[in-house]
Image 1 (cartoon, helix red, strand yellow):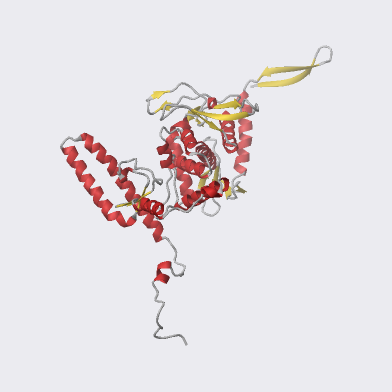
Image 2 (cartoon, rainbow, N blue to C red):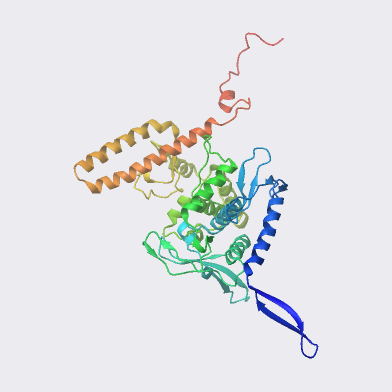
Amino acid sequence: MTRTRTTAGPGGEQITLTTPRLDGRSVLSAVRAFYLDIAEWAPGELFTTRTGQTLRRAAMRTESTGRVWAEHPDTGQRLDVTFEEHRGFWTWAMVEVLRHTVLRIEELTELSHHSLIQYRLPGTGELIPLLQIAPSKTDAERLLVISPELADALSAIVTRIRAGQQQVPLVVSHDKNERVYNPPMPLLFQWRRRLENRTVSEGALRSYLDHALSALGVKDASGHPMRNTFHDFRRLFITDAIMHGMPPHIAQLVAGHRDINTTMGYKAVYPEEVLNTHRAFLARRRAIRPNEEYRTPTDEQWDQFIGHFEHRKVSLGDCGRSYDTPCIHEHSCLRCPLLRSDPDARQRLAQIRDNLIARIAEAEANRWLGEAEGLKVSLAGARAKLAQMDQISARRQQSVRLGFPTFTDTAGRATTGRPNNPPG
C-alpha cells in the first residue's frame, strides 16, 4: 500500500521517501495474476510424492480455496493433496502418541502445551522430560516418561500448530461428559479451520484411523476388514510392556488403573509366552540357588502337585490361575478372565447363555432388579467366552497339514505281525 523512492536532497545527499499509493490493489492484482499464470502453466506435469506415488498436477479450480489438487495419471481421479497431507499427519500423530503413552482418547484430546514438564534427578542432575496426564476416568493425575520416539512426535505437533508463531494458539474445547466449554488452552491436538483454530474431534480421529486401516488392507482371522479402536492401543502397550519386563504393578500405574486385575485383563497371554517365561524364571533361580536345595520330590508330593492341576478342569474348559491359589471369583467361571475356554463345550455354553436370557426376563418381569443386574454380568461373560471359543476354532481351522504323521497316528499303528502285501 506504500511506495518507496529515492531523491536528491538540498545538499545533494540521497533521501528515501515513502509515500502511499493511490491504488495499492492494482499492484496486488498484478502479483496474484503472476502466480495464477504459474499455476495454469503447471497442470499436466508429472511429479513424484515422498511415498513414491506418481501423480499429475491438476488444473486449478475457479474458487480460491488454497488447496492443491492432483490427478492420477492412469485413472484421472482427482486427489486433494492438501487434505491427504493433513489427514496423513494427524493419523501419524494420533498413532504415535497413543502407542507410546497408553492414553485414553479423552486424555489425548486434552493434552496441552502445559502437559510437557521436566524433572531433575537429585543424584545426577539429569533432566527427565515428563508428560502430565490430566485426570479423566479415575480422577487422578499421573506422569509418564517421554521416550525419544514420543518426543519426536510431540515436537512435530507443536511445530505444526505454532505455524511460525512464538506461542501455541489458545483454543476452546467442549467437555462432552460434563457438557461445558473449557477455558482457552494451548491444546496440542488442534488444527486450522477457515479463520480460526479448533480442537480435533474424536469423530475425525476415528474416521482417520478407519481410513488408514482400510488403505492398508488389514484383515482379521475371518477375512473381514479389521477395525481398531483407540482403546486397542492401551492393550497393545500393556502387553508389550509386560512382555519386555515391566512389572505389572508399574504397568498399572502407567495405565491409570485402580485395580491390577484390570491391567492384567488388558494383557494378552499366549501359551508359548507362559512356557518360555516360566522356563527362563526357573533357569535364573537355579543359577543363584545352591544345588543342595533341590531334592527329588516324594511320590505323595508329586501326586499332590499333579492332582492340583487335575482339579482345574471345569465344564467350559480349564482354569488358568496360579498353582496353590484359591479361586477369587467363587467358581463363577463365566466372569473370570483366567478361564481357558474349550471350543468343544460351545453347545453347553450356548445353553447357559439361553438360560441366562430366560432368567433375566423372569427377574425383570418380577421386578427382581438386583438379581437381573447380576445375571446381566454373567450373560456378558458368557457371550465373551462364546466369541473366544469361535476365535480358537477359527485359528485351528487355519492350520496347514504338512503330511507328517502325528503322535496319535504313529502310536496307533500295529507293531506286530507281517503286512498282507509286503513290498517287493
